[in-house]
Image 1: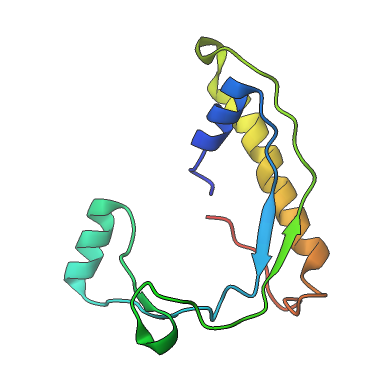
Image 2 (image 1 turned 180 degrees about the horizontal axis):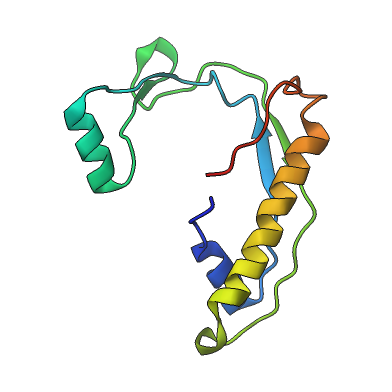
Length: 125
């Protein structure tokens, strides 16, 4: 999320509010395996992410997730002004992106005890 700022630019171009949303209990919805080895490391650095193998119920790849009760929580909407594309600056994008990240952290912290995540901290990469 730290380097994902395109949604902020789009929201500024359209004057659309952004809404922080967090889903608890997604962990365990799918089984997964992380490939290991030097080749996987080289591939991950080349494409920018580590390909994972994951499966759902009945071991169907990309299939139906395991049944879990999910909790979706919503933060406060952040209103963004409508700005001409040529007027959008890095500073403006960074300002609203930081507001979004701060609200995501606040949202997680407000709900983590009720959801059984009291021992965890939210790490935004």
